[in-house]
Amino acid sequence: MATGKTKGIVLRKVDYSETSIILQVLTPTEGVKSFIFQGAKRKKKKGNIVSSLALISIEYYQRNDSDLAKISNIEPQVIYKTIPFDPYKSSIVFFMNEVLNNTLRENEKNNELYDFLENILQVLDLSDNIANFPIKFLYRLTQYLGFFPNEVKDAVYLDLRECSYTKYEPNHGAYLSKRNSLLLLQFSGMKFDGKDDPEIDLKTRRELVYDVLKYYHVIFENFKPIQSLAVLEATFHD
Image 1 (tube, helix red, strand yellow):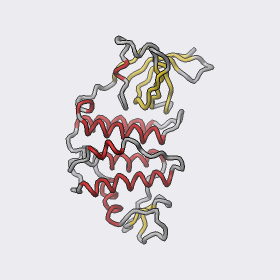
Image 2 (tube, one colour; image 1 turned 120 degrees about the vertical axis):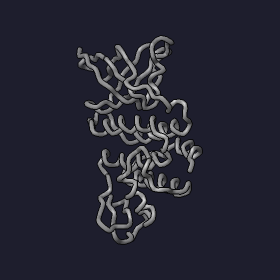
Image 3 (cartoon, rainbow, N blue to C red; image 1 turned 135 degrees about the horizontal axis):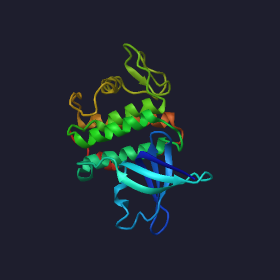
Image 4 (cartoon, one colour; image 1 turned 180 degrees about the horizontal axis):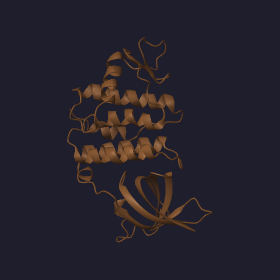
């Protein structure tokens, strides 16, 4: 039997019994890892700290013949100050969580992805200028999933099939308009705190989110519709 300690980002929790849950957690060194949290539903067992994309620290033990680790202790690594109390930030977290569950696979180690998510979640929690956060999250996530668009000098269209910007309008329908392609290029270099974001209206913001999700549908054959998108849209603001 092995013991271990890891920090993690909560991706999913599933009821296991009347008192226990199964957690799927993104870890820095083992990718998505599953844990059983026995007694999590009891009031004194800290089950309330495992909300969507919570940053946690876990101590666990695991039998050599089992894929499921058992949590012996769990603590918050970071306590969010604003996300639980801000409807827009909460909707962004639910949206991010669903996209990640749609794209990440168990045991795929990706410590750069972990560092990226750990950082931007804390930026989201502490920032006020977050209107374009979902666009930047979707676009920059492609870098860690392996299909970040190739940026070509003087190119003006994003060809979704070729994962590349191009100077010429593609002869198929899987590409973005010149205007939205150039806006994504701008967002590519922007920080997540939103202080230097270009000004765009609500309609354009909605279009860009749908455009990048279209890119995911082209790349991932079984990419499911994002159910939390409706809630995110309801909280969009200028």
